[in-house]
Image 1: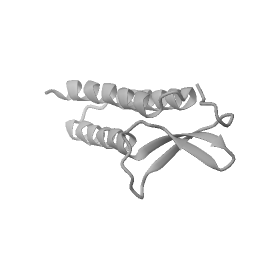
Image 2 (image 1 turned 90 degrees about the vertical axis):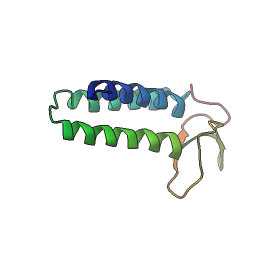
Image 3 (image 1 turned 30 degrees about the vertical axis):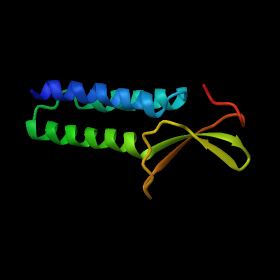
Length: 109
């Protein structure tokens, strides 16, 4: 597979992962969309094959981190969080908790 195809595949994979991980959180979805697009746009004129491979590796690592280390939760009351059922979470010490801000008991849409 050529580098251009790998880059496009990674771009699509990052956006699909973003949609899964931040489902129902419009602010996080938009922020992640902007960040992904900015990173790819800022490197679109890169000509070095070695540098492109390094960027592909970084992007793949970020996608894996999002997919395996982010847990989505909803604030249900003063001291309680309901953890989403995204089933992508594998507990580990480096887990990142993504908390949706909003009114207790109501998911943020």
